[in-house]
Length: 226
Picture 1: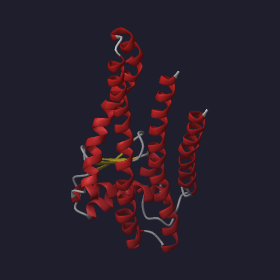
Picture 2 (picture 1 turned 180 degrees about the vertical axis):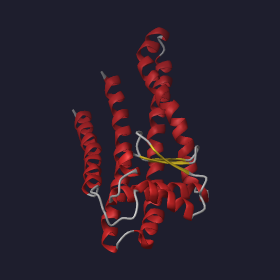
Picture 3 (picture 1 turned 45 degrees about the vertical axis):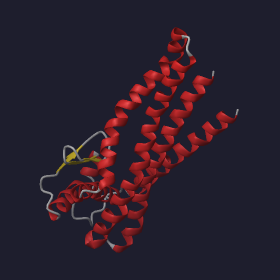
Picture 4 (picture 1 turned 90 degrees about the vertical axis):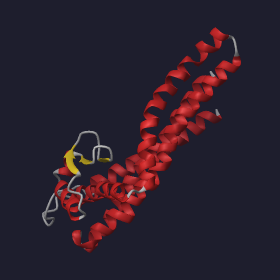
């Protein structure tokens, strides 16, 4: 019963930040005819302004992100082509990651390594957790099952660690890099407060992702208790 209550609380805390973030992004997605360019054009301009001509700007269906390995800022079509407060703010945020990479910002490098590790570890963790009952029966050794259980939990823990590292990286890209750029003449003064809301909403999506990793771990523990 307690696990069920905890699970419902985590589920609510996971869904609410994501829903709020989507609402904020949608609220400021209207076309702004007073803006001189789209999100993609602003990203290209900011990169060139900071001597990052080698960093490309592309559209993607995989969500807005900066790829530090390929050196590419990737924006969703509505942000790449859009001329809205959401589009230009999201573009500036992703450029913020490119600036982190160029400056040798250590937490970004840590996250990049952890993401690659977590992708393999999470898949391995799912396999280990599924194999746990079978291995325990075959070996008839509870210690073998314990080893597999610990390995599975460690793999899910890696995903949680990635999100914990990701949040400060996102906050730095938003508030130390993107917001000062936008405030340096790219946005009217009355747009800066909603731009901050958009950046906060983007950060909350990573809070939701962190909580989802915890929920996923809780789900596997609940299965094993049955």
